[in-house]
Image (cartoon, rainbow, N blue to C red):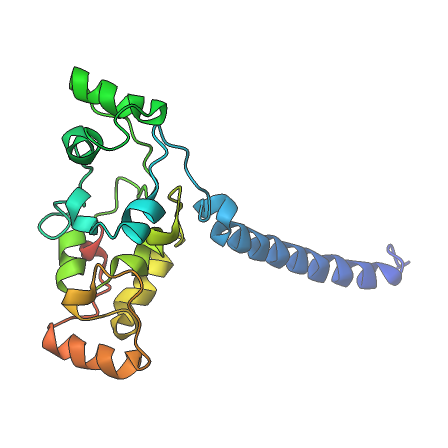
Amino acid sequence: MAQIFHPSTNTFSKVSIFGALFLIGGALWGLAVLNRSGYATQAGVAREQPVPFSHKHHTGELGIDCRYCHTSVEVSASAGIPPTQTCMNCHAQIWSDSPTLEPVRASYRSGESIEWIKVHDLPDFVYFDHSIHVSKGIGCASCHGRIDEMNLVRQVSPMQMEWCLDCHRNPAEHVRPRDEVFDMAWWTDDQAALGAKLIDEYDIEGRDDCSICHR
């Protein structure tokens, strides 16, 4: 029986199959890179706010403690957004006529909250508790970066599940003394030894089961 296909067809078929596999593999790799990029995670994107509040000025230069504004960070899941009254404690006397702060004064007069733009916006199916992280010695800077150096707040960390799991599985790299949690500039030369010591002292479990974050 005469041969229907030319022998070169075998070579073409093999090249096509392997080419398709490499193409699919390359596409999957590209999607994984894109998923971790700032384009997808929005890391590094500064958010414009109704009032250009500068953490660099208030926290970095004036030394105002995080807890002055984020009053519930040690006791609840949410760090809390300060009411306008907190701003007016100072700005009733300081920069009281500044046009930039008119939205703050308008909010104070009307009683309507300023509509701040959320920067660290986790999906609704993710549960995160600030208080447990603070009580276990996880510093603000571990998740938020050097926010004391930011004029406009931006998300520094990717905030993806694998990023959270890396910390939950290796907490020693991030644990610090509880009294240093709110010190953005805190640093130690021997984090491994200190972290191992504090894990025992604070009774930290490196839990990574689904129910911790998905409830």
